[in-house]
Length: 240
Image (tube, rainbow, N blue to C red; front, side):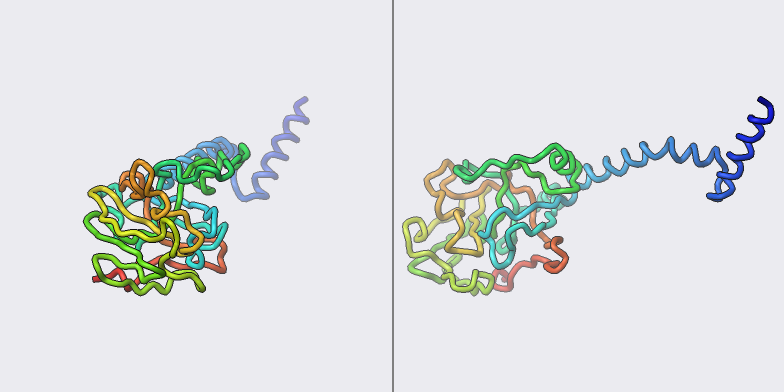
């Protein structure tokens, strides 16, 4: 028995010597590992809740600025300091009044749900949309014929509009002239002929406007895939 105990002690010392750390230190690290993982997940949750959050692009309504299945990073911090959406920004917002009706419901698996909760993947079960802000409270925005789109009487130069599309759609709902109420924004997709945006929801409870309170944040960066890394600046046409 004494020889066996000595042999075990020698083996433990040899193992500790091989990895360069005392046995007690290695056992301490193993005990601390769950705590370190927990702290990392908590930090990820805080970042996702208050700072930035990834979102997946579910449709082609923002092409070619954003492609289907792109991942964008959304700034959620500035709204906490009272900043409101500005003209030209690409924003993510909660579905204001059943805009997503008729589309398939997401069915994320448990792993996807868990990763979404800690911000390591875009949340798959939230009803969010992404569009470009073209007008804010007090603005008058209008479309006649096929364009151009006008804000406060000034025609916009919109190079981001999908190639082959016209700035305005010459169809029912595509022709409008509205003034944005306080606390609201008017949004449109860059793929003008393939975007069910403010134009086509003028009969809902907000008359097509999106409440500022429903805005999650501004999309600032295409983060995935790596071949599409790019910032999402405000186009020059919206600058004073």
